[in-house]
Length: 293
Image (cartoon, helix red, strand yellow):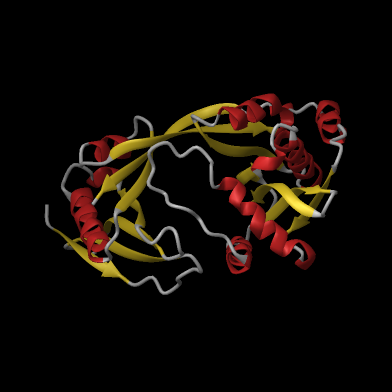
């Protein structure tokens, strides 16, 4: 089979990364597959690249994926990257493809879904209304309010010790620009970002947060983007409290919403316990792969 690999321009770098892209096409110009290589640019992650590769099902096993992978890996080396990560559903063709080409498995992610129709509203209300002395909940849509912006950006370090097993993910350094850019990126896609935060009443700082993203029309499934609590505030049930409040908001604000999805590292026992307590049901497992350059 004869085909061509064409580098493409991605003109929209974000605050924290930029992307390279390639298109595989046949002699007739019909697309066969594509590859995107995200190059992280913020401090703490300049060594890392993230690969997304897809080949049309009818065109697999003809070298298209291998050629796209070679182009992306060559570019990662030219950009002086140390690691390339990629994700695949366990047991899928992509899973087998990556394992056969030098990538090693570094992290297992358990995906789960909460069917909103199955919720017990009274039980959910009880979780949200359970007192947590010394803390209060606050929430907002889109970009964080100015009065909480600095504290919210600082609270993102709660994700720093999230179990990543062997992944060479580096350290994500959050600042105000990155927080705002993340919210704006969701809005540009036509989606809705809702954040619940636990505030320490002693000093008014954000002790933890839980983010949910909804489709713009309020239908289908929402997606949890992150739930985390700063180390000094753990063990007080704040994660379940915030996540329960986010779920209640989803039911009340988006009555056409079918469910909520989340993914959690297999080794993150505390967050998996929170998901279980809230009624999330595992749907599938994904594998994070890493290629060391």
